[in-house]
Image (cartoon, rainbow over the protein chains, first blue to last red):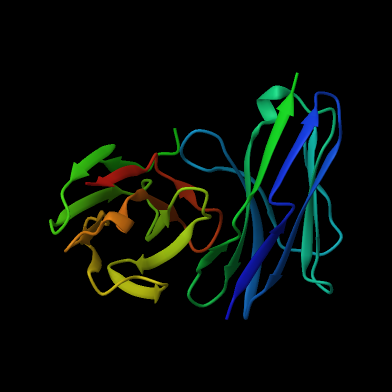
Length: 111
Length: 111
């Protein structure tokens, strides 16, 4: 059965800290790995990764994929209170183009 | 604004009833996905439609059904509702397995 596992489940840090969120997966017909941020309602797209070893970066957020070891990490540097959210990792599969989500990491950044 | 529209935003109904949730995908997106998110749970994949045809099914209960119409909007029908069906129901759309964009969700409360 396809599965995506995220760790830690939750994390509390102080502003300015750097955090690393983990996502491991076991799926058939891997196509891409995606990161989303969910604040109050709808998840919003952050990154899509398809190739191993190539870092994607957007401001203080960056992510990288390891297709051999089947995991990805999402780094957030110099965290701010506005980074407080649930971070969701999803894997899309080819063929059915299904997106399988992990349970998410709940990040709380304290001022 | 993701471009995905879901109605209604909130729904309160009694056990045993039937409801219909509606989703209009982003312009041009042929794929529509339905997800259920219960309290402190990740996004549980329910079903995927592509251009009117069912592509993949997740852990969707037999009491639930969905369809995608020729104009590409989709409806999720939930019947014989139980208290445990209370959740946020998200619709997402994508173009050929690229990143999925989420609607704001319908919060269903069964009393």
